[in-house]
Length: 329
Image 1 (tube, rainbow, N blue to C red):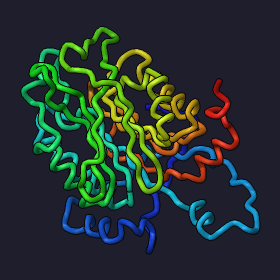
Image 2 (cartoon, helix red, strand yellow):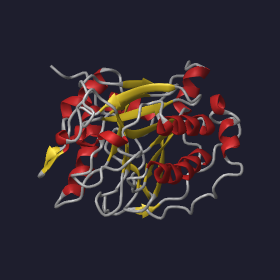
Image 3 (tube, rainbow, N blue to C red):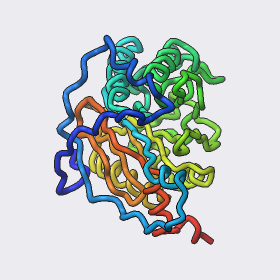
């Protein structure tokens, strides 16, 4: 989709240099062994205006602070069309996650319902739900360990109502450990669809994940239309909104998707990493947005990954220039 006007093709992100991502040393290298071949470069990656210039630094700035200015977290939004077949989806997911790992991604975000698509409105989802430590979660945990990245993915998890499972995000750490789960709060009862007929909502508590560089806030698809929910995550110190989605096609829906992603980034002066399903039902258009609303990487409707670097220094620069979070009353 045309997320922005005046886009130009961007080069492939450079591979990690010697010593980069020290805490993951050896893990990404291990992921580049005898696995699926590297995917072709993505023509749809975009570059946008440059970030704000860093402020002048005093002569007494310590070495640690100078290093912090150069710290970056590489994020990858993975886009594909999920099937109603868990095994087939894992066969699609594995090479995409490994490719993101080969590009040095430390955060890899998969779409909503990556485990199993919603399917038709009459398809029961209760029978396909799995516990977080079931076959799907176990495989995602292993991919996180293999790539040395935080991996976030969408699945269906059993609830107290057998017929209506939770729409759950799982986040696994570089050691394959479960960092967090988030159950979708706002179910998609809109545009003639009733997700609440098939799924159980979560309790609405904001879920954040602290990483070595930045704190992540988890939200799912329709949650994006509720600015107060994103703000609650930012009030819990989230610096990156992670948004797996299966954004349904329809008149103006792609415009809504792109506009809302940029709005959540701008109003919260934070990064947004949005990974969407593609295919005939969903818009695709996965996007990484910086705290000024600048798009850093994007996809159209193809299967692939959108990769961009997230900078704590850039985040701090924007929040100094636009202290809107501090100016609230």
